[in-house]
Amino acid sequence: MAITPDSSVPAALELRGVSKAFGAVVALTSANLRVDLNSIHALVGENGAGKSTLVKIVAGLYHRDAGDFLLRGESVDFSSTAESKAAGIAVIYQEPTLFPDLSVTENIFMGRQPTNRFGRIDRKAMKVEALRLFERLAVRIDPDRPAEGLSIADQQIIEIAKAISLDARVLIMDEPTAALSGVEVDRLFAVARSLRDEGRALVFISHRFDEVFSLCDTITVMRDGQYISTDPISEVTVDEIVRRMVGRDVTELFPKQEAAIGDVVLSVEGLTQPGVFTDISFTVRSGEIVGLAGLVGAGRSEVVRAVFGVDPYAAGRVIMSGTAVPKNSPSQAMRLGLALVPEDRRKQGLVLESSVARNATMAIRRSLSKLGLIDSHVENKAAAIWSSRLEVKTNALDAEVGTLSGGNQQKVVLAKWLATNPRLLIIDEPTRGIDVGTKAEVHRLLSQLAGEGMAILMISSELPEVLGVADRVLVMREGRLTAEISRTEATAESVMFAATHSQEHAA
Image (cartoon, rainbow, N blue to C red):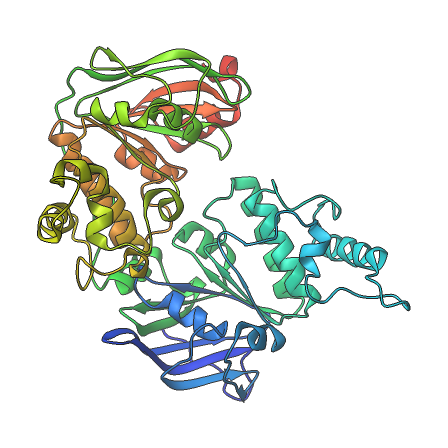
C-alpha cells in the first residue's frame, strides 16, 4: 500500500515529477521522492533506474529539466554542490574522496578552518571539535592520523562527521556498505540510527535487501527513470520490492545448471606471501564453480591476484593443466588460459573514457590488429559477440563505457575476459553494486559457462551468492584457508564459523 504523506508537515526533502535527459538519453521521466525528518528512507531500483541521477540533482551536480524540488517546504534550485551543502545536504558515497596526505581533522574542516585572534588556523580548536564529533557518533578515530591508509568504513565516518559539523539535515548514503565487513556495517548502522533519532533525514541506497529491511523505515522503488511506489518497510516483502524493481518475478536468483566436473584445471600449492597469506593450496576442476569466502581482509583478493601474476608471492607454485604459471606475469597467465575479473571494475577493469567496443576487446587487441592497426569494423564485430550474449544495454558500441550503469559496466568487463576464451575464469565480487535482475543474469551466465566446461573461481562477500552458485566453498580467515565445504554441506552457519574461527577449531 503506497504511503499518503501528511502534506501539512513539510518534508525534509521532496522531489515531484522530476525529469532529466542527456541529449537523446532520458534518465528520469517522472521521479518522486519524499523524505521526512526522523526517518531513514530506502531508495532502491535496478542499475539504470535513475537513482544516481536523482541524487546528483539533489547534490547540485545536475540541473533538472522539469519538476519540483523542495527542501523543508521551500522550492530550491542548486547550481553547484557548494549550494547543496550550504542548504544542509550531504552525500556519503560508497568510496569517499578524502585528501590522503592531510590529517583526519584537516579533512573534516577543509576550506573552513577556524582561526585564532591572530588570524592563524586554530589547530587545537579543530582537534577538540573533531573529538567532540567522534564522541557524539560513539566512534574512536585518531584525529591527528593521516587519512591515507584509513579503512573505507573510517573514511565514511569522517564524511559523516564533516556533514554533522556543517549541520546537514539531509544525509544521502549511496551504497555505503559495499566494501564493509559485518562489524563495520553494524557500526555504520548505529551511527545512522543515532542521526535519525537526532531529527535528521537519511536516504539509504543499497542493493542489499537484508540491510534495507533491517535499517530503514520507508522504501521508495524506481524503475526505468520513473517512480513506482513508496511504502512503510513493515508493510512490504522482499519479493514485492523485487517485482516492482524489475517489472517481473525473479523466480530464480541462483539458477544452477548441471555440469560435468572434469579434470583439474588449476592447482595452487603452498602459496605464501608473508604477512598476507600462508600455505594456500586448492584445486579447481573444469565444469566446477569454486567459491572463495571469508570476511573482508581475509586475503581472498590477494591470493587470486597472486595466482594471476598481478601480486607477488614468496613461496609455492601455480599450475595450469600441468604447466607451471610463471610468477608476476599476467601475460603468461593469460596465454595459459587464465582470466581475472577484478573487484574494482571501474579502476582495474575498465578505461571509462574509452568506448564499449574498445573495452570489450582490450584483452585480445593483438589478435585483431594488422601491422599494429585495428579496423573499427573488426573491433565492433569482435565486441558485438559477447556484448550480445551478455545483453549489454547500450545505445551503441562506440558509446563511452563510463556512461553505462554499474551492471552493464560489469558485463563489459566480463565480455573483455570471456573474449580471450579462458579455461579458468577468476571473478572477484561478480555482483558487487549491481541490481537483483542483473545479478540473476550474471549467476545464470556463470552456471552456463561451467556447463560448457569452464573452471570458475569466484570470490564473493555475499553468503547467499556463495551458497547458491558454488559447487564447493573454500573459506579463508586471516590469510589462511580454514575450511573446504561441499555444496551439499555448505550452510551460512558452517561458512561463517570457518570465517571467524581458527583452523584447528574449524576442522
